[in-house]
Image 1 (tube, rainbow, N blue to C red):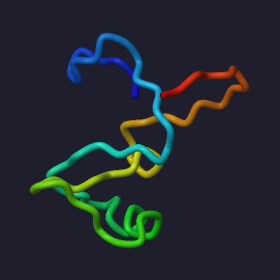
Image 2: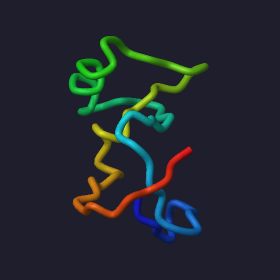
Image 3: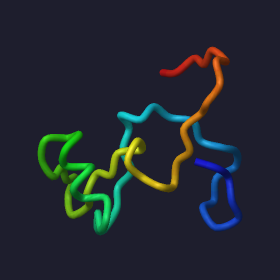
Image 4: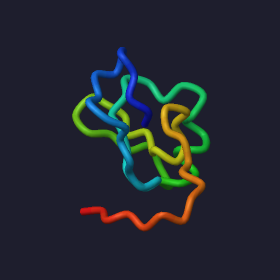
Length: 69
């Protein structure tokens, strides 16, 4: 996720496509999100939207090694 003035990030956020963000509504992403998850996943009253499906994330197209935790 690219840092913008609106999202409050202090730097670009790099995550794997299997991570999810919490949203109020899946909207147009519901079908593809459910296909990858197998069903609609929720935490409390929020839907989990996979980073791989969300348009808020951009796929990195490089071969730089990253360490993730």
